[in-house]
Image (tube, rainbow, N blue to C red):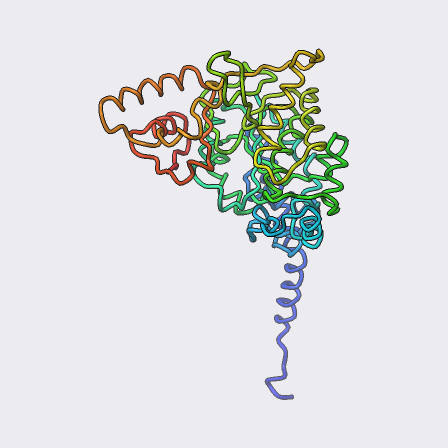
Length: 414
């Protein structure tokens, strides 16, 4: 027999070992990860599972691969997740519905998968970590768009509530990329979780269940505003209705503790003479679980949804509902506090740019000091109106620079 044909007895053993590792490797890695997490949790009841391990464990538990697959890949891979919108030339309602029905598969936010179906159990487990107060945010844009200023909003929550919990309802941040973004806060022991919401189950047994079923079946007009933005308006109402707590936008900077607030909403503007509110806003909501006003909000959303009018399903919705339930013919039971603009919206969106500028003279510096004092004394936080201010540079010595410096943790804002 030729020497080249002689097979060494070592080679089959190596080959067999390689095959066994390929088959069992994921299971071995998974068991090691679980064991490490268990030790950490026993050693520190306030510790949070490291984000990367958490995502891997959750996906393994529900049968998803650690690597991305076409049906379950991070939605951050595509801009269509948040910006998919009906073409502007389709002005007729029927034309929009026909287009929407043909593109339903592109609106992944409407659909369930193995990971999103764990939403309720994952959230309950997270909220069981002795939360002093539970905050919620929503994020319907790509993870790469969640930058330093959005992280600053999360930091401000923990600066005033170090023992609080913050849940971000987001498919894109519930990913490896999202884990890396939130890791600086996780590393310092703060309780923050990005979790992909399962809208079919979240909206089940609520006044919007039928509306959502018709929308995801392509029977409703999504309107000309990105549907995900209107779904964000709805998600905040439903998550508070089912779990209770505080909702804040990702462009809202918390300045002091919310622990004294209960069933509250903020006025965006008031009449200068009567001092009665003229417009409310839904960027900050504080409500108990199952509060009847949240149910009224949802009913109005389902009954009067208009996806083509900016703010109609958000600030205008909460304004018209509260005007009705607190009016002359109001029924008892809707216990709600409407806070003045100074609480959440101390600076109007038209004037927000002034806070990003460095004072150029003595008069401007005096105004800035007075404004900063007012904010620190009267405001629970400040809405930055990101649609207006996202392009503004934070100048050194500006009011925003001072506020960020005083209320940041990681302090990587720009």
